Length: 271
Image 1 (cartoon, helix red, strand yellow):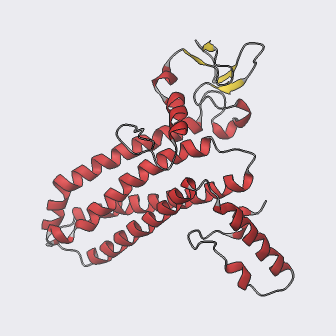
Image 2: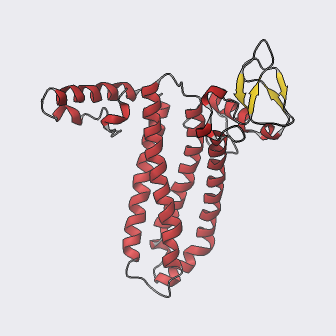
Image 3: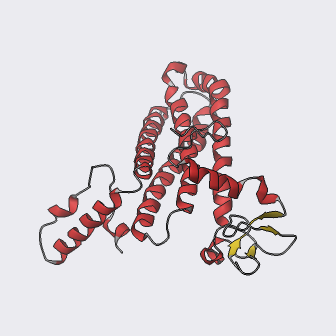
């Protein structure tokens, strides 16, 4: 059983091999002047210039100095010659989680008592806010490692890649809505002059977003731990639905959701 931990955090849903490679790519070595070629492993020194590196002959492998990915996968959409969005986005994931941990601590030690006074409710009835922040911290952890998973996903497996991006996108969008509510909308009630009539609506909304976001990430983790195997059944179901629609048949066949876990739009998996 794998026991690898990164900063004492579980690494699910990715495996140890992926994590090891990802750490090598994104460690402090990124700031060093020398690192091994991703293909032939010979050391390469970089003193200046852009992030487009070409290994010496006979290897001649072209790669990005920051993320060590093949240069063929880079371009304007990833930041051009002097930046790498793929590296920056993954790095930001760790920063966002650390900030969420700090916010959770502040909520537990300072804000909860203040909110209790402002809204005149016992702290025992405000635990939904702590639960929301605990969910945010956990989701930030998972999201961070999904970037590593996606980085090593085979570009040739288009259906799996689209399935992964759909699940990751749904989870990330849900997380951002939850984070926005827990951080920005919460401030209205924390800084109010007295009890607000809308506070119960806020409580219902935040609790609901917490539950929905948890479901999104459970689906994402389950899919990655299963190797995105459900994509095959969904591809078949989507195409079967398309055939029935084209033939004028009933739409009943299009309601198939495999195991009932993922709810995919037909267009997502069209290839």
